[in-house]
Image 1: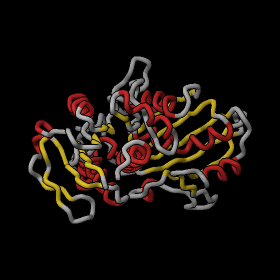
Image 2: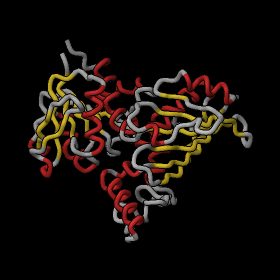
Image 3: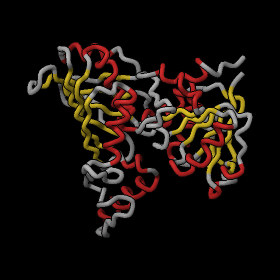
Image 4: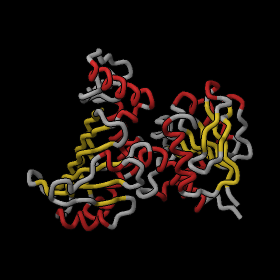
Length: 341
């Protein structure tokens, strides 16, 4: 027997990716529903590459009673309205928005990092998916933290425009084309031109000068991994369509060499170590698209601090950063709590 699964926000980038990954990983499904706003009601969307077409249902009229799991990829607004209704109807919500991440009664889960935290889902029947940049970071940090205990992390992100949704991808495409033909590249989605440029600003500014994206990385890493770890982040939007990259500097309590770290990462769940000290011996965002792994390269010792390492981390933000992690949570939930048959 399988599950009755709802994908909310099914017509967006992440929602479509959720459908693809559910199909790819052959998640045990008896029935699946694609749900979105009234704008998409009646549209048809393919369930991965199964050939099965799903007619999009209107979230305003959808009844969650009798459904097992709802994967939400609809943003904080619709989630705030409909996730509690789904949860109250007995459907476990796995939410990709930021709405519930720091709620103490909602577990924030990366299955390779803190699977035990899923035990707390029953308090609200809701599980939160972390921010895309946080997800890949903690997958890389977890095995190293277990080995040598991390004190401090300094991370600079290079985040693709798909993190801003379809509008972000369209803006990069349009601006690039306009520049080639001599037309103006007017920013609409982003605060400045994104084509052939980088923007050190993601989400709103906070009182201390950091952005909300940077704040998310700090507080989510602490909640998922260890509240004692000190984290500082600089989040930058770059002209890449898909795939987030991160330059990470780590200070440990215990001694750890680059070779030891490479050995640990080579065996770590969810990590793919590609680290050759030669031209091309590392992974870039273009190469990670469509893959499940968090790729780690450029592991090296930092002589400026005691017990310091630096590394480069790349992942498909629509997959591990969002859709894949949500499906992995659903798999974990099924194994531990929603067993069928």
